[in-house]
Image (cartoon, rainbow, N blue to C red; front, side, top):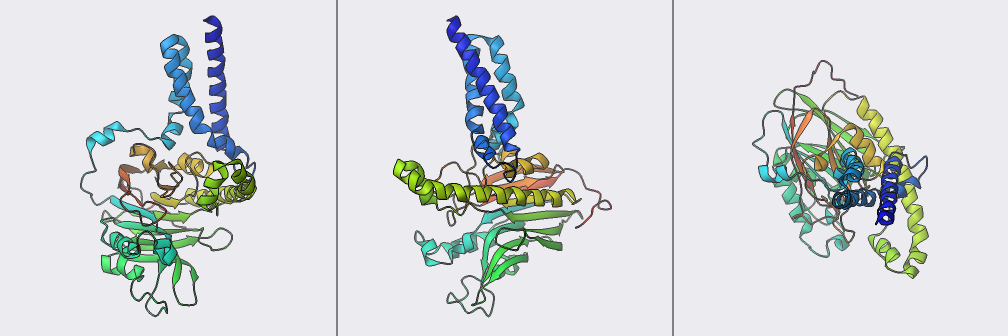
Length: 384
């Protein structure tokens, strides 16, 4: 028994060392040492094993259990990143009626509203349903990635189906700010968009080297309370990896040999690009004096450098009030949360949900309710 306990204690120490090393890996920029990202991805397993060690030693020796229990307490915010636990939030129900300093915010990667027929194989009516749902949604502010619009005068064959700026914007009582990255030969527009029922008093676009679909935009909004707040909408570098290739790579040795090297190259490129992009954004965030809300398709999981940099400066809405994994990817890869909303410390987060009932994209929309905890000093506010 003594030998067994000694062996178990050594294993506990190894798990704690692994856990601390994985946390260190999360904080290493991929552009500096990209293999550290693989260590960061093992963090959920290390956190789980440490909790298992707590349970084991509570049954064997409560004094020894104090060590992994202390580590679990100190690393609990990292646990909450991937598996939020807020039972009181479930018991209290949804948020109360909004006030003059409240913002109802919705974010969605709309996948160009399935404009191409192959994107709507499962539901030919998905573009109509998605645009209508967004137009009728009670959210005050909408942040949309991979946006698509056909303005009056475009020469596409879909008629008025994709007049998304008009339908989600003016006809729904919202102002529109569209950051266009491409206008094709037929006049159709691609990019990102922010729609707001509050007056837009300032706006801007942030490119990463050059303006592509992976960029950021922001809008300064005047709330009924008189406060000005800034909402950022951004889309970080994707892996450019097909879901089927990922599944094939781990389903067999032949698949791993055939697909693995190419996936690794694309994985590395994505990691490096996102680390540069998020550092660029954090520098901009630090210069802004308005209360901020961020909506993002990070293309990265909660145990990544990109997420970690944002979590160091902002509250993550799901980790703060959510329950469970909060997966936002609508595909064959399970438990993947790559879409997030963040809030600066001056906000109280009343509610957050993932809309699993809206399956019209490869991302599920997310929505949240935020209230300013105290009126910011507008005299001290500084716009970029």
